Length: 334
Ligand code: GA4
Image (cartoon, rainbow, N blue to C red; front, side, top):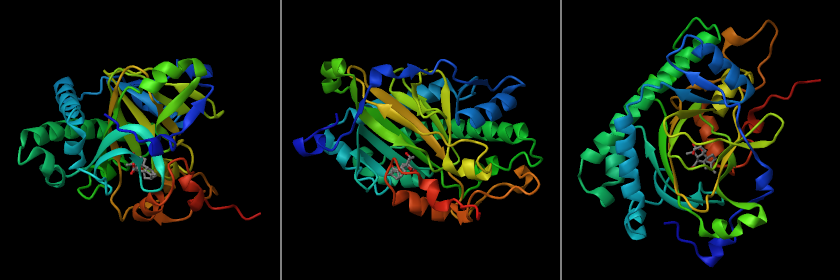
């Protein structure tokens, strides 16, 4: 349960005019088993920075086993979960997101792409048990494989000769990928307050700093994405599929051709939402810059040179809703 004190309730944000938000009915669906997948991926990344994946190849058993472990973890008494906190940046977090004053109606576990580290970080809650971590490992391996397939299709769709130009960043043993479990408990206040057309924020609007994010949730709604015209649309949940976000780093690597999608999660009055997100991050020393093979003649980079380490450092010093890429934009000399 998310425990709220009077002091923290005051720091929550609400969104007005929520009943006017429409449902995203034209969400691009990529069937990974179809030959047109690469074309659909590129179009979706250009238009929305977001798409849904079916026939993803991740074992449903692995998904359900991890979901059930996550439910068990979030059902533990608060003081037990706190033993795995605070998130520094890994570990258990409750309401507080990052270290710069963001709050949400959410509790979460942030984990590394390294099972030894994860079992050590959670040992005060789980002791030396290994079965929970093999469930996590199985899920992460399956999702990594899907991520690799998607990134290869992306390169093919962009007509890049080096098919693994993106996927090698995920498969590198130094890859700085991370994993997040988010639990949004039902918010009783929302159930009462619906008539006010105002919603409490579960996770505030932001873009992901990484390359892509691979998200699976249960069947509870809440996710919204921001379209090019700045309107917000609700994404209908689908527990059989994965949802993919383009992150800031991929926007840079494609020199702005792909769109890093702004998204948020609204709290729900009656149902609890559980999401699991694998954020594909490159090695810390990786230079993040537009790929030369994608640049047209005389096209200039929209961004200054930086490494993933530089970007991550700057991102973690920012507020959730900030436009993090603006510090790295190159202002064209007039
Ligand atoms: C957004 C994407 C991932 O969830 C995350 C988040 C991170 C955190 O929760 O600690 C950040 C946020 C995210 C971007 C700006 C900073 C850092 C919270 C925050 C205010 C794990 C990530 O990598 O960046």
